[in-house]
Amino acid sequence: MTLSISKLENMLASKGFIIKSFYTLEEYCIYLEVYSVQNADSFMLYVSSRYELIVKDRENIYDMQYMEMKTEETIASNYAAEPDKVEVEDFYNELNVDLNNEKVDDLEQQLKENYDRELTLKDLSKEDRDNIKDIFRQLSRFMFCVKNIKFKLSIFYKNYLCSITKDDELDCFIIKHYPSTSERKLYIYIDLKTLYTKLDTDISCDIKSIKDGIYRLLNQNQLKHSKILNEMLEQRVAIIQYSDIVYNKKETYILYIKEFEKLLETLNQSEQEFLNKINEIKYTNTEYGIRGLQDDIKRSHILSKYDEELSKINKIKKETINNILLTRSKYDNITLKMDKILFDNSIMIHEISKNFAKLAEIV
Image 1: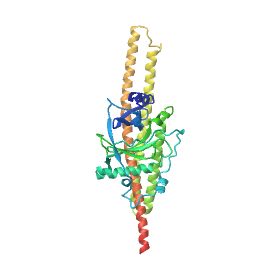
Image 2: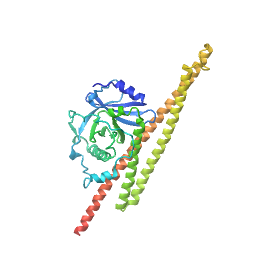
Image 3: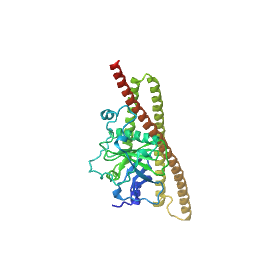
Image 4: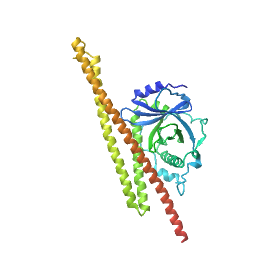
């Protein structure tokens, strides 16, 4: 079935969403990066290839290639041993977020196996290969958080996109000609069918609830990992100090984000007030109704003044949204990296402790 990109854009726009980037596989667009004009929240929208969504004459269109991730390549080779699944689930249990989701049928069949799978981890540089493995391990842990909800998670790194699919599997794509950045970016990932079922609800609220839940969980885990390291390492004071510095930095980002969000809310209210005034002048018989040439001039002057104010508001809104996106990007990056570092260290130190116990047995 063929899906019109214009129809999809209009549908999203009616709910306050704008498409920022398009990601294509072969000839079809299967991922869209979408953000809200109301609160600058962003998410990844997955569109199955069966919809045959073709995108042309748009900015920020990126072609992707599927990357084969073999099981043996995703093993945490950096560890002394692969962490036990139950131990991981204790840290990353299911999110306590009530979205009032109704049970729906399976959204779509799994991606067809006829995608290009020639590219593997072996084709990447060691740095990229190690980081992709890290992200896959991270997403495999996050899978416990979202296993019973329709919303999943994606992580951008450099020109790679890794995602938990709707079937709770892991996908990885390399994005051609994508502006590369070493920072990791966390996105909520939702498929088109789920989006349609949510059109009459506040999707932005659901997305924000899930992401806030992830942040809370990662912050809780940061404290848990720090506690484990504190108990195992003699240099625990230094470790806690570093963790506190990072935690305080994240709290600073949160404060910035909240202030920007308040500003955006105020701007939205001001914008609506001016729009109401303009509509009142244009479509109702008020003080500035049509009475003659002088009234028309006065009416045009006021409308021009309101239009100028709206332009100023829109300019500040754009700057504010950019600041929110930038600060959230920094927050995502430091949160994901901190989780990765502390989780890895906790597992490795646990293995070291077990080795010390074995050493005691042969002394």
